[in-house]
Image (cartoon, helix red, strand yellow):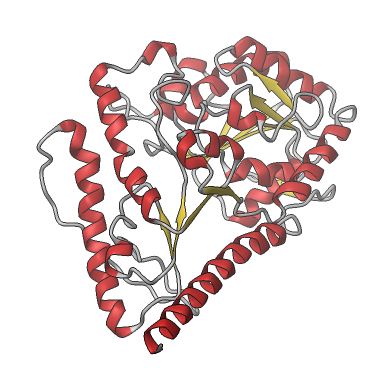
Length: 382
């Protein structure tokens, strides 16, 4: 079930719902009221399914309200919650930038944003989250109800290829061994450290005249807030750094092309405030990228300094630039880090193993529910 249907896929039936529009009585309640309206809209669809095609299991996101009333309309159907992110005002993305400290009203709004998620967690039969860092963001009194299971990375598809090439929009062909610096994000915004990367890249460009910078990402707001002046971060940072001719920007890449870009990258820069880890980082590591990451907790869960990658402080452009230069200078020396990066992903995030864990959780929930219903039928018959 979804608000916006995706292109049709074989074997998948899509059902849409639309939350009722309403104005929140308080700014602190805006997210909560939207979550409740979402839960009501989903419950109405589930109610129809109860008569037409009752599901064996419901899997849904705990943070957006869709599962709020699932057990109320389908009490005998097991519900598995996907726990993506629990918002915290301290030691999180919210207060990470010292220049943008949260106000009292921000804290109130943030606390209420978790309300639907906490109510949902009390109702679901089981829950899971992809990483240990995401697990730690949840309150201690609910963590024991949340398993840790990643979606998985296809390491057969995402793999090193010494013969790979990548063709830039202007026709230039990049290959392994070239000084290619890559940066990839859904949108070029501060949450993924785009301004910090660009400022460091300007220093790298001075030190390494042969380096080619390839940035993949859109101009949307992303996870953060829009700029107050209405300008795009890409425009502002190109103007500030003067990297127009050195920087290749590609708004979007097909997945196969993205993998080829990872395969030729000499230094893949991945920065993130304390927030949900990008799956693209793990795909890059599976391709054998030499990662230059930010020294932030979600990144440090998968990148260990000088064991399978390099780390630098998020806000220190000079240190970040020096680390990128080091990666470019020592490509052969750091081949061992590339191999270790792939080995880590294969050991902990390989797709088939992750799918087996997810399917095992699903099968146990369905089996337990079938057993409970059979016992109820036996008691009723007796």
